[in-house]
Length: 427
Ligand code: GLY
Image (cartoon, rainbow, N blue to C red; front, side, top):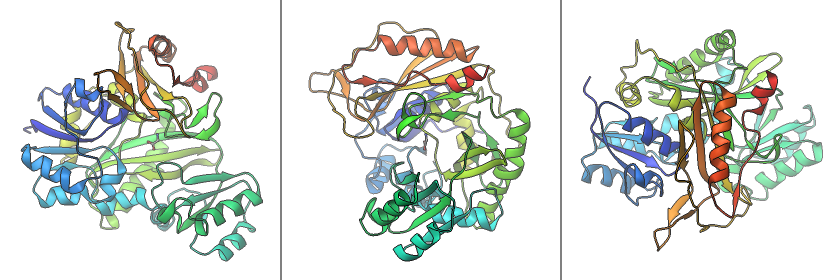
């Protein structure tokens, strides 16, 4: 199989920086363009300032630069139909078309599929009017989860601890315009309890491979306290998912999900990221995402031995059958350095000074960074950097990543100090 040599990666986060590094490691030695990228990605690839949601601009860029493969990072361009437009322009792309991206863009659509195909998930009701939603709430156990149907940058999920909080969440979305059009329809779902795990599946329709299993830390504060974020750190392997449990997840969730999507007539070639709650009754689906996780990707990719570019190329071409993954036994960890104040308001433009050396097998992946007029790297987003280390044990990986975190100078830096602690404490 001949591999693409001139590729475009769409996005600007830590996930895209990890994708760039993994593709650069391919023996195909591709030339990589990133749109729009960030200050760190620009050290590894050629960044072009076209926004990730500018579908017309991205197709024009791919044509102008004679790109032979596009890898789409974030969900928004997928849901806007970027892959549909690229395929119309005869440019191969990795990522689902808009019909597949709907599995992330509409939580109600996903829940309907899960229920139709009897894939384990929590019971739920769907509403666009306040009165029936409030009536439904009174029939369900509290705490309960109220979700905006559409994309809301990871913020559209409210776990209500009391009936009053749940009623307020319903009103704020259906009457108050919270989350705008994304909250015009809502899903009310029973709360599930347990540990969460992230299962990333690369699929070409019916064939698929399950990538190394990881665990995210969604809350801003140590000990899983404070508001939800896009993710403050990850580690892999997540040993809570034993080989037996992974086989069960594959049998009861992954395979039925991939087949259900194909049976619905969706030709899904991309990443199906299944958020799973490990409940006492067994694994149960929280959500589908239709792209690589961030910061899951930062720990999953370094553990894969295969030529990663070849893997995505095979999936995009529908040629994944027979592909086997080789996974390194090492542990990986990613500690996210955020700007103080995130996920609420935070300052941009703070200078970042990087250490001259890093612990071994440690990389600084950039997310919200830019260069100011003087060429200084400064903060430019809520999640700023992802410090990723690989080591024979999680303890050693964590030591390396945290040693690097300490040596990065930035007045507004904030990070959690307990990434991976759940697994380490279990031991
Ligand atoms: N880290 C969670 C996500 O990518 O949605």
